[in-house]
Amino acid sequence: NPTTPSPAAQPEAVAAACGSRPSGFGGRFLTDESRVFEQNAWDNAACSPAEEAALAASVEAKAAKKMPADEAQKLDEEAASNWDKFYSLHRDRFFKDRHWLLTEFDELRTAGRVLEVGCGAGNSAPLLQAAAASAEDAAGASGGCGLQRLFACDFSPRAVQLLAESPECQRDDRRVQAAACWSSCVPFVWDVANEELPASVAPQVQPGSLDAVLLVFVLSAMPPAQMSAAVSRLTPLLRSGGSLLFRDYGRLDLAQTRLSAGRCIADHLYARGDGTRVYFFSEPDCHRLFGEEAGLVRRQLLTDRRLIVNRARQLKMFRVWVQAKYAKPED
Image (cartoon, rainbow, N blue to C red):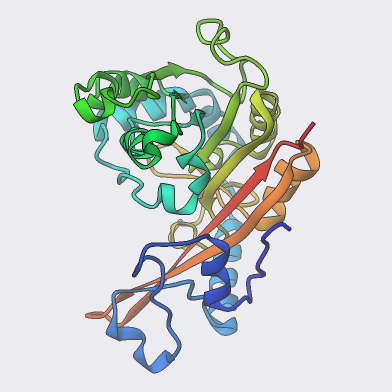
């Protein structure tokens, strides 16, 4: 049965829906509001109805002042160059390595062929490569195998260049090289929202050839119409039973509540100060995109919340992400 805890679900239920976690990971629950400032962060902590209403009212008021249409059009035309500038400035330092990736998406431990869309400068590649080696260690004489080949694409040529030059694509880690199942990381440029799969990789990524497609903080950089186009190109690449794994910003996330008036392009779509765009998802958005439009089967759909606390200033800040797992129907 698909896992779909409601926003009002108890923290323990949401944690269970995320799958098994290491001890101490994602398990710090706030059960007594009077203790809120005793820790720096609390897992699966939703804001109160009054706090949610105040945040929603603030977001709505600021969103009422839309970005002028000509400025929004310019952002669309300059999207690639703005991301290139972003990666030229920050390289691989802006986004932290996703140490939670294999915990939240256990499917990646056994997926042989994976496509990561929006790979950036490579915040997932080292974890997936390590999984290839550890899967073979765990399999031992059984001959089991995890990741064999990682295809990693991005809209930004600069991001792909950084990944191609990284140790993850040129490493001599004997443990990884010794994993007979590991083949290689294949970075390539692909504007998945507007272009067909590049001819340079099409022979390697045939329809029905992928075990998993990873969409982590990438669809939020597109307007909704482009999201649909992207998913329609990705779905045929999955094998029967293959997984589409998604995590991205949710409604009323701290990143949304901090955006100023005049940054809103359209409903829940904003422009950051550096010219990149960001969309904030709801669970219905995800099911429309992956279930209703793409015809995939829901395995998990949840809203993951974290309360960040500034104890010195007595401030509460809410992080909100939407996470989903959808599968291609079995033949």
